[in-house]
Amino acid sequence: QVDQVGYLSSRIVLITDPDHALPVQVLPGGERTIAYGSGAPDRLRLNDLPMNTAIEAGDLVVTSGIGGRFPPGLPVARIETVSRDPGQLFAQALAVPLAEMGRNRIVLLLEAVVSDPDASDSAGPDEESDEAIDIEQATIDKALQDGIEDEAG
Image 1 (tube, one colour):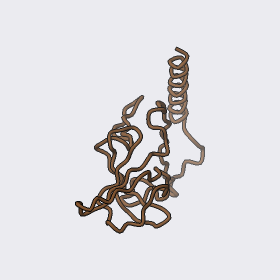
Image 2: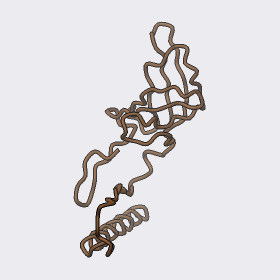
Image 3: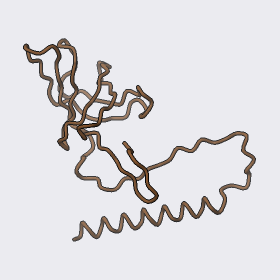
């Protein structure tokens, strides 16, 4: 999730961050809950599940769309374990993110463009927009090159 946006960089919060919470749905049953970051790069927590939950290991966790921040149905994780401790009121599940959180260092952010049907600009993008695209592409190219050089080491 994008937390802060700067001119040439942005701050991203991973779904595994302990302060991150994501409304999700678990398939095939369709149960809705919240996936919390555990702080570990390979685990999410799904707390406060009913003790009789149908969620089981191997189930797919997808975004629910609740809250409008993420569209529904984006694959997030797979359920690894479901714990039903008799001394607790709720069950808890652990899930493994589908993306390798520790691997990706460069991401591409796309901005949604809403077209205005009343706009009368039929000439296409202006020169300022073209310059912004050129600057953005140069920044992406440099970031990719720096990443390749870092890995080559």
